Image 1 (cartoon, rainbow, N blue to C red):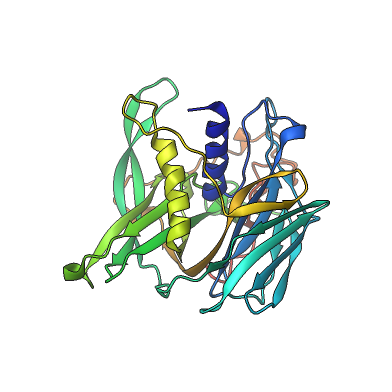
Image 2: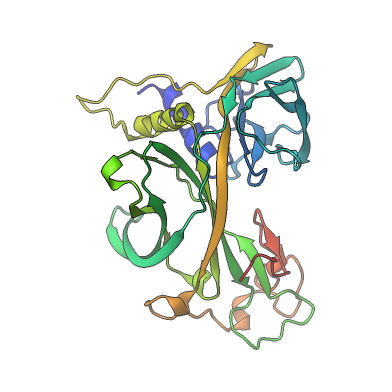
Length: 359
């Protein structure tokens, strides 16, 4: 498999897993790509258009991201209507009033300086999206340590219930994880002048979750559980752990696109492996010389959340340390003191106020 193909696949995997694309070192400014990650939905919720550039991995600094916040972004339909999307920061563009409608086709347009990009025409699948019916169960998973040893670790497996149909249905899931961060660890601790508890987004799971439910007429209406992910059991589950599960129904062409990415990732270079092929998105260059990578999708979507904590799991009970001397400067509680102020924790979402959707 060529180095350039591997780089593109890694870009796409991270793009569809944690939504923060990056490129491994050795890629220079003169051959960077604009990465477009765009989904619009029939509800207008959980839709996103994100623009960013391939970036380098810098030793000592980690991944350096370059978002594009000055583009002109719009979605047009086949009746001639155009809907503008406004920059919201971090390379994201939104239009809360927009929702895709059945019977219409949609096209994404992005202009960055002298460069202009457009997607193909996409439309909603014929099948209306159904609500996810997630569940969780205690489990064990094999974990590979840095020294090469494999061990069985306690975990929680997240599943979704699928109902078989008379036609093929193509699914794509996105999971957002949240937990309660305890800045000190034990109830009753006096943290006057600081914030002890925060509701925080967990590290994104680097997973490309797609599934084709093949039509088998005699089994239509039957249900089965489909495994989505496993979360290692740990201190984040002392209090409530939440998983926001977004299920997208997508057209077959975009399923094939995702599936090709997975197949390339699973290609280990064996004698009988298929020859690698270029993975093409549905966005083309209309003007300019900048390269582009990504896709535009029109999906049905529905979402829900599940919650669990250690008291609802048959695992050992956990506790956090209660020794204030474990944190330097414990007599001077400030935002810079991560041990004592949960608001100082860096995360995509961090709130000292309980979200309205929390149970």
